[in-house]
Image (tube, rainbow, N blue to C red; front, side, top):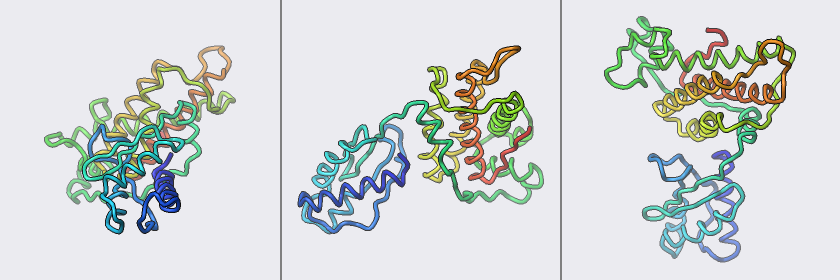
Length: 271
C-alpha cells in the first residue's frame, strides 16, 4: 500500500464514519499521512482526528478511537495505535517477497530532486556527485574518501550495487533468459525489507534518511548476491530460482536508481 493509497483509505474511512452518523464533523477534501519521525511508531502517522476535532463536538482521542476501530479492519492494515492528543500510528501488513518485488517492478517510481546545494569549491574538488553526498555524510568524515573506489566509501558502494544489478540483467540477457518474479528463500529477507521500505522513505523527502536507506539497500544486495548466485554457473541451465533472483536484482537496481536520482546523483550502469 502506497502513501497515496493509505491517504485515500483513511479519507474513505472518515467519510463512512460520518455517513453512518458515528462522527459529526465536516469531511476534509484530503487526508495527509507521513512517516513518523521516530522508529517504533508504525509505518505512517496521520493527524486527521485532530483535524476533525476542530470542526466537531468530540475530543480528538475519541474521534481517533472511532477511526482506529474502522481502520484496523481494512485490508492491508495490521495495527493502528493512538498516540498523544489523537495521532493515529498505522502499521501495514507485511507483504511476501514476491509481492514486494512485483510491486517495485510495476511501480512508476518518481521523485523530484531534493534541494541539496553543495558549495562550488566542493563541486570543483570532488565533482557534483560526491559533493552532494558529502552534505549527507556524518560530521568529521574526510570528504576525499568519497573519491575512493573502496568499500569504505558509502557512495561507491551504493553506485557499485546499482551498476552490479544492471550488469546481472545484461549478462542474463546474453545467456538468453529474463527475470520472472517467483519464490525467494529467507536469505533475501534483509534485502526485501529494504525494498519494502523504499516508498515510505522516498515519500518522507528527508535526504539524510534516504542516503542511509540507500546504503542499507546496497549493503544488503551485495551481501545477498554473493551467497545467492543470480546467474547459472558453468553448464548449468537457467532455472526458476535464477529468474526469481534476477527479478530481485532488477527491483534493487530500480530502487537504487530512484534514490540516487532523488539526491541528484548519477546512477551508472557501468562502474
